Length: 53
Image 1: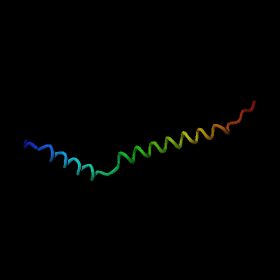
Image 2: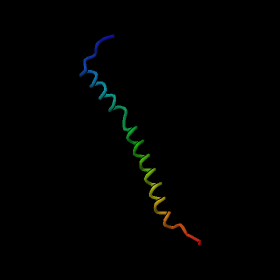
Image 3: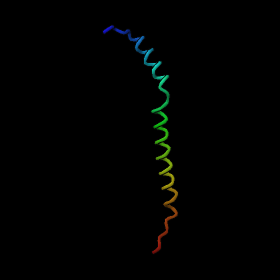
Image 4: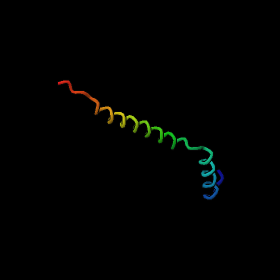
């Protein structure tokens, strides 16, 4: 097993990260957006609840 200098390893990791794209970031943004929409809908719609006492 050959020894790889740290600078080569970091350069390879940076190149691989650029090629991968924004998959995890996009996934987190979409999940937060959906949860926010659900909470906003719940907050707005609970004001329209009727009490038929």
